[in-house]
Amino acid sequence: MKKFLIINNPNAGRKKAIKYKKSLIKFLLKQNCEFKSITIDELNEDFINWADNIVAIGGDGTVNKIIPFIINTEKVLGIIPCGTANLLAAKLGISSNIKKAIRVIANQNISNIDTLKINNSYSILRLGLGYDSDIICKTPQSLKNNFGYFAYFLAGILFALRLKPKKYNIAFEDKKLSILATCIIIANSGNMFKNFVSISNNCRLDDSKFDVFILKVKNPIMFFFEFLMILFNKKLSNSKAMYFQTLELVIKNDFTTGHIDGEKRKLKGDIEINIAPKSIKVFSNFSTTIC
Image (cartoon, rainbow, N blue to C red; front, side):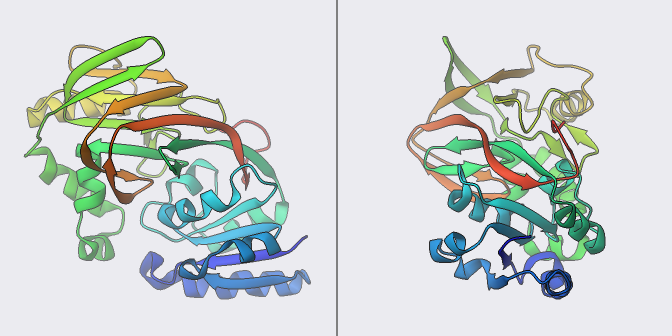
């Protein structure tokens, strides 16, 4: 084993991160590994340059803050999931059980996964606009503290009752679209609600392309119907919804609010999305491709 940098978010998972950090340090001491431990707010290039392996203790937002420091490097990312959603960990087969999560790191099984570049930001999971953004950005922290990931489900019902379509001009490959949409999801990883559902069975972390999901309907009942049909892969593109895969995409934009990997972002100017193939190394429970 090599040098480990532990990066914990002490506010994640109802403060489980502190407890999990102690368990990880105990493991590293037994393995006679050299390590340093910092909080996510202390992260800088000097710490990253020192380490061979980076272990994030937190949720998807914590991982997202680390990605710019390790993209296209030989650093290997480990995850101890203790955030609200932990979607990347679920996609990689990493358990929320601390002993099992540490075992993934101990096994030293490394996978190479894609990253989305969204203007000057990076994403491993997805960019969400409209309804998807409202759920992530407007769900009160108090609700998440009390109900965990189920809070997003409760918020989803509320926000579906006040859908607001917005006009989007989209260009990809040799196509141009002008549409009214209530929800747009650009996904590198399409899983939602852990790994129970996904916007597409085709959505993989290592296929060198990303998936685009657009919902056009504003009637709450029809919206839920279309949303569920796509989540369970019963229906794809039609007059009310669109689904496609691409390598690059541009959304004409003056100003909008969205989320990148669960973190609220104010997006000014056109939104350019590109894929960075197999640009991050991660410890995972998979030996080859990641479904």
